Length: 341
Image 1 (spheres, rainbow, N blue to C red):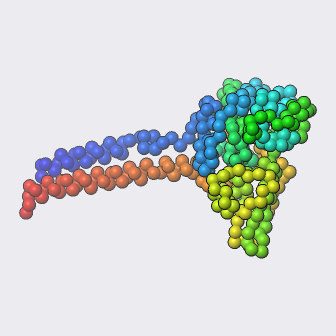
Image 2 (cartoon, rainbow, N blue to C red):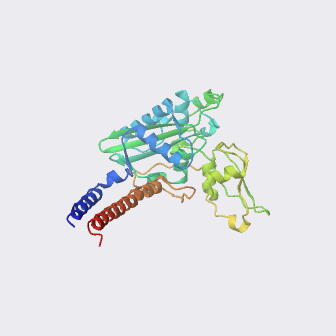
Image 3 (cartoon, helix red, strand yellow):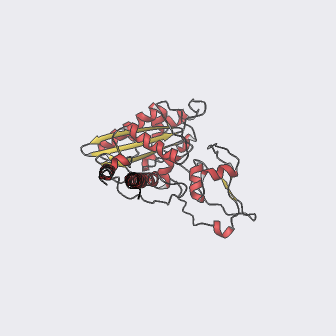
């Protein structure tokens, strides 16, 4: 029996080591404290990847526009999309030489999310003020190809800007760019009122007699915004329309979004304001947005992080059980060898 005691001692010691491990060793961090533009771009691209979307490429002009806007907000103490002197976001991008795609008279394919935080922003999933459809579209739209970010500080207040945009396929400026640059600031793009993007809202179509629902793509709409509106997924729409992995949709395109539906089940209340836009963010990042639609296409980054954080706990329990079983088995073997009767 004396030789059993060393095994029991080792078992207790192993249990003590396992159970004394701090939580941050067993689980990866669940949030990021955003203190640099590169970190802000990283979390946005991680969010896109979690939805099965490709990451956006950082662009020096978008980095410049986002940083200048963050600096402007910090200098004025205002959370705003307006540029100094009434220049619009579109005009700023064009003046800096960005080959902006889309209808430039409507502002082109570009969007901006802004937020103010008391102290560095803790990214524990998407901030509440950015969880509405318009702000999520800034980060998840397939229309955009590039991203930039900026952070500025004034006292204990931090100001953040995320700029996304789509470049022309040729990489050249559109012919209408010169007209937009010389137009009166604050014109048709509506940015004087705090608008950061223009997108025709998704209006739900009803099912046909065969149960199929078709949607006609409108200006600024993306597979993500269409999938959210119809309560389906990007992959389902891709499969129904033989798109493969293609995420590109174009204005006027007819997409089959659902099959086997009934007309009664597909008629949904419409909330279709004239513009689906990002509103000016309240002064703190914890403030609630004006409207927060439920996002049901895929899990959010926060939900994924919570599931990941639960896995190390179950793994630790399994390790403890295996250690106990191993040492008990070893002790019994020694006892049987010394006392076969």
